[in-house]
Image (cartoon, rainbow, N blue to C red; front, top):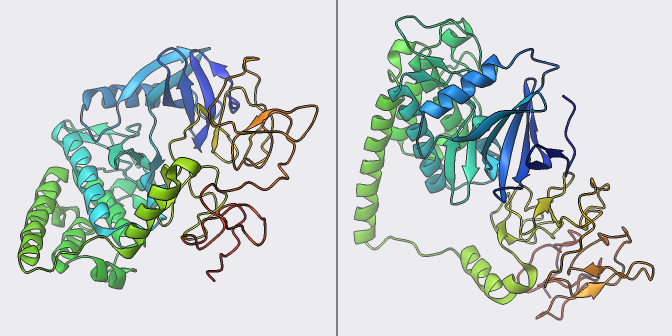
Length: 430
């Protein structure tokens, strides 16, 4: 099956954009036109995989596992002779989140959720066989969910040998075709090691592993030992399954909470950092004007999808992958677009599949295109007209600020920003 284009229809679903592409299947974000909600669609690549047995197996296994940290399947059906799996649409994968700065407390919370999901699967005698950051999906509120049970094996008296899995995270015995519950423990231990150290250990996994110094700087020695027990080469020396691993993790958490309460009694509890106070004051003054409802993918500062760069750390397209304030998403830059636009207003993206001739009003429209043949309405800080693709030449002002960028002349919040959000030019604080 060839790749689907933005706004193309397949059954009741309208494609928004492609999220991921693998050798067996593509995953798309889509809009359910009946239930009026965004979903993720997993569609096998029939040209690369003959038959849908693996995907039918994935659906059947996932249906057995009902848990808040396991991604449920909304529906599975054949549409135009293609097998389509519909699931809840997340914000990003754990693999994406690992690439950005993450606090130790938040990483611990995500680790706990990952363990809860895998423990539930093991309690139901299901071995996942492909534990990796890409198969953990983040949802709003930092809810983490495990997905992709295509390689999962149900533990019976005999277990069908399989070397399936992702090589970077695969346990030695699983690579030899003998997956066990301890194999998932090993893979999850590697995921955790990367989450806290920023490094993925490689064979022969001899201790101390790469990134050991950074790991020790972030976590207590007891947690380092917890990870070391999970990444043992000999399966018999690991936790027997995720249930036992979760019990050990929760025991560490209880000890940490007791220590935290003791520090608080001694008066060492900290308040918000200066940066958080700065962001709070900025939001009070400019959130309504700039629609800064997203967080930067690197520093987690408040940003909007119209920004070309993070005004705090300079990161490119900082809101990419965040939940949009618009009904659809540009497949090129992943910023929000309206269903009646012909072009992306932010990245000069290509034309979209024509869906409707209806024009939708929007209270955010405050200006008009300079092209006399167009005169289409514009939303502040658009770079291009979504109707005729004309570049916006008149500089946008920022209500509430008299400062402008020295390079692009667009309005900036100079008292807060380190970079121009529109052209990435460093802001001089005079």
